[in-house]
Length: 209
Image (cartoon, rainbow, N blue to C red; front, top):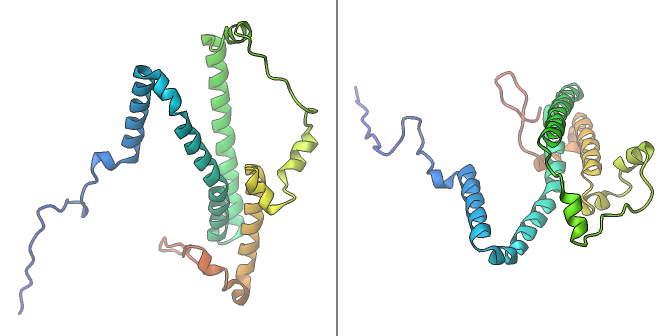
């Protein structure tokens, strides 16, 4: 009988993988960046003002990625769900979560503003400095205008203008259409490679049926 032998790796962790260094952690990097930014702004205020362009570039890049990210995540999520009942259930839970968390955030903001007096005196200071208050332009939007604006009239314009509600509507319609096309395997064969192999099986795997 042959006896198998092996050599243990002394640097391998008991969990099966090497521990990730702390400086590679995204949360640690964000905290360090915040501390460095605050220190530069406090020690070198004039130099920090010149660095504002870096923040503007970063915000523009974030805004560029938001709309495609929302579209792809919602579309892939709907298609990977496998059926409309599961999509409806997940959507209902997401809406309830959004409403509860938004209500708590608004209540916390109102309590903080009224009890702590945050923002008091800003209007007087800006008026004394010669800053004109913002003037509302155009007519106020009604509820019907808001509902109408949710639905896009152009696929590209919704992404170009950054209208996330319109992008969300497009993603829902696109995902529902792809989910409906799963019944026609020949028609859907050209679209399937565009999405990851998710399956909803009893063993926990998620992929195309």
